[in-house]
Length: 316
Image 1 (tube, rainbow, N blue to C red):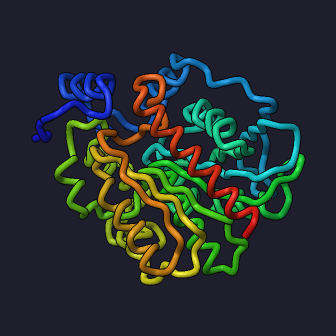
Image 2 (cartoon, one colour):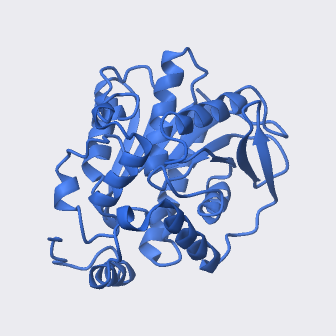
């Protein structure tokens, strides 16, 4: 049973959104399936107001692996680059679902953004998405981005945050090059879904724990592997030597506790960490900006944080 809404969320619009979800939650992901979820997401993306105009947008094929990507530049050339990895339970999400968010990020943080169209489950289970993301980061760090870029930061939301964390771990273990920083928004860090918020926030807040579990099953079909550090970064024995991190979670999110725990473990390992939990918000606030002023403001705070991180790494 979902928790009661004892007080309004961060704004009236989010409260109305949650109440609507509770009245009509719709069928679970495991009933709908990946193909229909993708179709429904495309329709939502088409119905959403377009993102802001930006100086340069270009679709690319990244390196020898042929990974699709989209480059956003708020100015002609040069400057830092954020390699962006979209969320979507490893099964949905694409360049279009996060186009508006990437445009807002590029303008809000004053940075180029490379959105990566990595392979998705169930057609391409683990480790395909990690392979694609690591390839894209290496390509960017090696100077592959048209017009040049640097320093390179990796950023992801939800399952994209999982991929960003895993890419950093793999690059550390393989000898780099490491991104200058990692930005993890409400990330999946524990595919065993054993943290308390997966139960206390598991239904009634927009994202259900069962939908996340279904996504994890598509991406990592073998349940015995879901506690492996190569899929669940919270289970890594050593988090030392990773890039500085920004970790932002949401109060009413089944993934809250695993994101908070990952931030705490990074800090304990000596990694510089900026961490906050956005009060009164729900999972996915980055792409809820047209629905809720509070969600839009939470996104703007992330962009300001990214600007600060980029300032730090420029002068490190």
